[in-house]
Length: 443
Ligand code: UDX
Image (tube, rainbow, N blue to C red; front, side):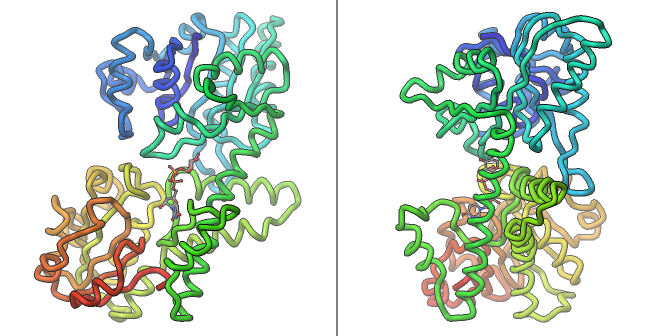
């Protein structure tokens, strides 16, 4: 099938590449000329395992193309995916400016029946706005062309996005007409060969499904973080509790790892947006408010432990931070717990020596230049180098390479054998036996 994918950010690029991988002809469109030029050369704006190879290969085979002209791309296909950004507005709601701009552009160029698919995460009711925007442009042009607006939210985990797209648990399609359902069914047929993965529902139901899914997962995490904090006060090891409850199939093992908070581009933004939508419609979502609040407090948890142990004034102290991205497998630092922690440490007078296997360049962009210039924040090239002379090591992101370090080498390098483990990666007994003072989450 022929597809136009509008927006070459994370979602657009992964989706476009994966559709082309299944044999569809895809044109990815973006207003950013440099980005499009780079993509043609195989230079990607994001890091995602396997994506570069897929893009380069399918571009070479002529299945995946890149363009800055939406009008031209629209001529060659009749399925238009909107996968542009929906940044968080100042009031916590999703900013729909880009989505609506694209809808207007589609309305200006539409010349035959087409299915317009909302792929971006957008609040319930957005498809209605997209439909109205397109219709308004058609009315201005005085033309009568039929079209359908469909909601098809993504469920891609960064670091595992290709697998999530190619082998989805389910494909949610919100479509209000038979013609749109038919197009979507055909489009996703190659992804549904073993069993039918497409779940059809109304457009608004699909929009809500995305928010409910992410909010449910965020709730599991915040719940577990809360349990961990209770465990801590009771002399209970939350890791045993986690295994104990996860074995109940109704609860399950996934997304019940306690830690120093969830980050990324989805959970924080989506929970806030759902709270906002809910409040706007006259309902105060107590549980979601608590999920959000627990997460914000959880991001401060490591810092609280540090000052509890070392005192509030950290002048003259230095800390190694292992892991900067919001989770392993990505260089994404949006809403990362590391950012909150490092800000607090530096505010309290400390020096931070940070290392991440992938996110070093990103870290260089995220933190103020002044901190690098005066040495308050040092980015080191190697994990052990971060430990030289520090008062404590703080593990923030559970990259595999941090899982089984050489503790003796660590101890020899550190001024104090003190570990704050924000992701419960180490066995407290083992590290204590090796002479470390150890603080985890909920144990
Ligand atoms: C998420 C959803 O999983 C995906 O389906 C969606 O559409 C986009 O948002 P992503 O943001 O890539 O994906 O990350 P995910 O792997 O879900 O992790 C989110 C955050 O939760 C990370 O900061 C992670 O460290 C944290 N987390 C996850 C926990 O703290 N505990 C857990 O048990 C699981």
